[in-house]
Length: 618
Image 1 (cartoon, one colour):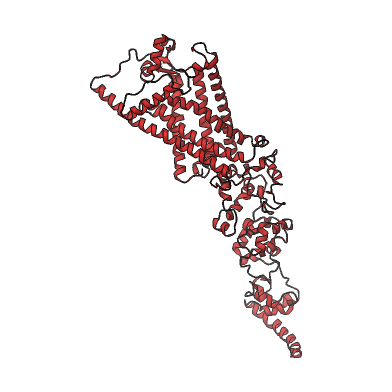
Image 2 (cartoon, one colour):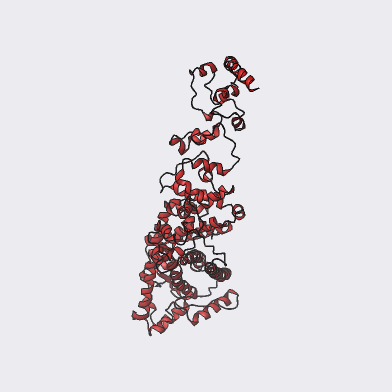
């Protein structure tokens, strides 16, 4: 049989050599069997038939071979294959890739073109292809991702999950926006899939906790180049479990890892909970109870004061209607002789300090709230308006500096009031708890009780001394706020310094305190304080006494009757007489400023409410 074949095969090949060129010239493909007659030493007929190209003729790719005789004589050479004739989508992606820029063509990766089989989404095949050239990334194979892929886990990340198959983009400048975004974006694709993480036993809140961090919020706002991304801490290819001594996040290596961004990071600094979850009482009890305490403070404060404001709003509305009805009947309930005369309530230094409070508080709110609610569209618009998160951070710190200035001024005025002023009688304890002091005393209990009775139509509206209980609360809140917001803010501003003597988890605590206390402060000022000062029926739409320091005798007697009575008994009322009211230009400027401040504050309240209703981040 073998002898017969050896005699017949040359004759058959000669016949094909004569017949097939004519067929090719008529537009028919050359039979692959003809080609394999000569090329069988390089190409296996069985392997080619089983490959993805097995149903194609050789001339489907080698289109220049139209005349077999000329080809066999060497007159027509085999040219480079143009895969784009069939693979248009892949070619379009490849054409836009970094491979094209480095003259890497299809066949440079697909070297097994005659035996190539469908990969069936087997990531092991992709990895094997890529490391043929990218041998420096061979550490990937020993990583958690590489080991899982090698074991056949198709959920684990392979080269194509991060870099794509054909549309492989250059990373560019390591500090560029696209590069820094890539460091985190590709990781999110898998780690944000909670079902995938659960079935693989992987920590499934990594993305959530990252997004709640300062790093994640900046990434979400569109400024990944300003913060650390996933690969900065875990590396890009050599991702190892924390217990592995070679892992970048192993406790022994954390100082080195953190020092890439935080140059002076210490071992204490590295105790920061990178993925600390404040709702997990078992793993992070300190964060959990800090969050519970701050939430309780926030909810409790708003519950009391919003109820207070609602009761006041209704009672004040009724009182205004009663006064209007009395005037229509020709009856004036209270007649204050020379009620139009103006008296001084605040000095210039008080007005100046209050202006600093307004400027700094608005600046802090406008730059801090977009960071807190980083998942909101309006937050991104605000950051773009500032020119980026770096500029917003600079403005925030300048305003924080102004806050420390006015707080220092308040401390100085308090010391001056208690120990230096000559126009106030008594020792420092008598001054501290006297009628001119902002320190709470027993009278405030009486005033609170009187106001509640008035709210409930059970008694007359109380007359107050120089300071009301809600004004004293505002003043005391500044001291608490400086401890909570100021202290935590300084820790977050200078983490490396505080990291020398505080454990890293203290920054997690500081983040919760700073965030929640800022929310409490902004919500309180823009709702409760604005109502007490400007929105209550007696003052609506605005009280400008803090801008010009003056109020009429009628207002003085109506609102602070006990203070006026005391001044009369001491015979000093005329010492507070204002010689003239503010000029028109001054009034216009400060009133415009005041209205703008209120409008900005109320706008921020609306945006915060919208964020909460939309399920914004905490």
